[in-house]
Length: 153
Image (cartoon, rainbow, N blue to C red; front, side, top):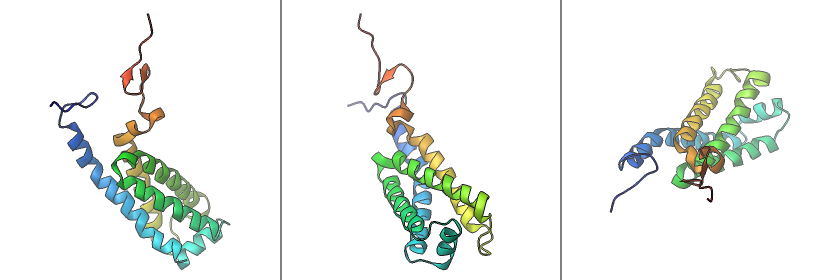
């Protein structure tokens, strides 16, 4: 039986999975690692969310969203959805750093800002690789689902 993919050769699915693996593990790993600090009320996390005026609910809420994003990113069928959640959260984090927190938070040398940029970049890469999983993102004009649209004669 011939394996087919939309516009690619038979081996393209394997390369896509391999290409996707590093950003999936990197993004999910960073998100999961930072959950410990958010959920245990680490001093830096409390400081950040107090500065933003949303402690404790912003800290806990963003932690829950990031936990869901990490799980979705690790499931092949939901990588793009997880990437969108992670991307949205990191746009907020980067915005908070640039507007209220500063690049360096509590003498961290810019580590948290760098991690946010890494997750943002990795999420963008995952969206590029897996964008077809999102119906409104993966469609090309003149297509319905995965098939060219046909106008009845």
